Image (tube, rainbow, N blue to C red; front, top):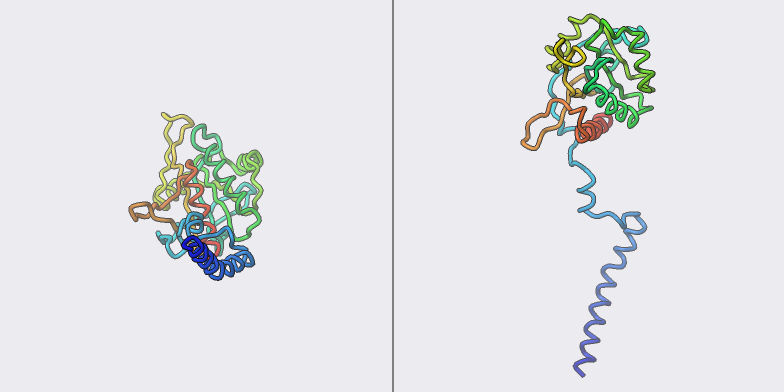
Length: 228
């Protein structure tokens, strides 16, 4: 007798579960959300929005010559999100890694007319437009919005050190004769430098172009700014 009552009780619980759960499962299947959950959704996003990105201030102006011997200023990038770096073609140390990172970024956003890249040479005596053109071909640059720039050395060093506050210097004691930062600047459609905050809530200012996480972070934030 007791056993029969237990079976009846268990059957009743199963029936109630079916009445409650089955319609929800059907709804999730029809909505193609069967594999989603709050926990999974939280793990697939950084939780950062465009509004969370720090506005560091207006990016400094520049007016230089690109690999196709055309004058390029910051006006070329009005309405575009772009990444800017300082480099030189004969760099034997960090530039090859920076090149690979920038190529990865180009590939991610290739074909988007609202995205661009700026690579400014800190060795303009060597890096003429012709040299930059060959270097672009060597790298496999495809985007028409990726400009490799050269110009007067004093103006370029001022742009790096005083404008962006990204270290660049000529130093014959180091391998390659120049030293510079491996950081990337991120500029939004309004010409302002933008960045995320670190774990302590401080603006990072620039993204590490030598680090996988830095490259991943800047790509995430480019997407946010493109949708802004």
